[in-house]
Length: 323
Ligand SMILES: Nc1ncnc2c1ncn2[C@@H]1O[C@H](COP(=O)(O)OP(=O)(O)OP(=O)(O)O)[C@@H](O)[C@H]1O
Ligand SMILES: [Mg+2]
Image 1 (cartoon, helix red, strand yellow):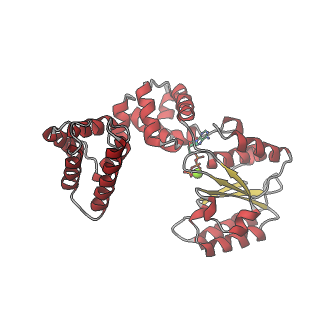
Image 2 (cartoon, rainbow, N blue to C red):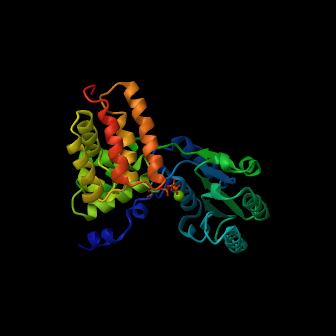
Image 3 (tube, rainbow, N blue to C red):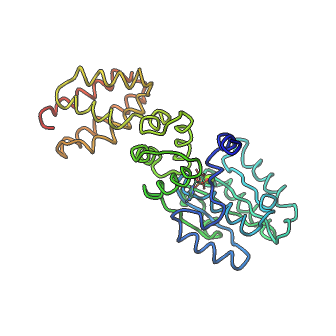
């Protein structure tokens, strides 16, 4: 099947990227305002703020497609502000692009990703560049944190805040892909994708594609490709320690560290997440969270994961019988 072969080669994050604003999930408040601008046939300089994988780039591309139609690629330039070659390279590319006449339109769009990674000085330079090309170019800046942008940029852009995506939104998007690719996804697997991606749809899509490449999309394959500690394993380990079965808890720990090849960091993060779900008193949780913090610190300082994590399990043993 030619179609299938094709789909295997394509990266799903691009293949399923919304082509229109209407396909963008959960950013209605932003989409409605954007549509109002588009009706006028023009847009202001804008700032899209929001966490990773919530649709900032999607909205920018959808705007370009709607405004420019088939010429959208010629009139749209995506650049990354955190380009390691420096802000001058970025400004050079903005200039080269902005100098050329828009194709079949009054202006072009520069989409500048990660603009909040720029130093304040670089932002001043960016602001001057924005002003010099104001006649022919609109800027869309994207940032995880709008408050990291200098005031003169914030006040010269219309700010749009994109919301974080919930489990339902992630499910909606994953099901779109599942339909397109003819995939079978269990509810467990979907839950795992949501938990690991934390609402970042790029991460969710990549997890899905990598799991699908292994043949079957289950909770286990999702965790395998994410190389994250499985919540069930961690929970079991902690409960073993809480019931005084230190040997078995230790075995579980070694299984994660050695057989599954997880890092101490992976495990400590999962322990931190799980501790709140344990059936112990709040006071015990607080004490353990403090110990987890200490262990994380020791790991960062170069402590041996086996030793430090075992010491942490010993702390859990203190609450034996109170589980
Ligand atoms: N709101 C959304 N609706 C539909 N798809 C989305 C949405 N948000 C993200 N995606 C999907 O997730 C992937 C990444 O989206 P996008 O590039 O827009 O994220 P972003 O907000 O720009 O994140 P980053 O800050 O990491 O660049 C794309 O494949 C896109 O299809
Ligand atoms: Mg992006």
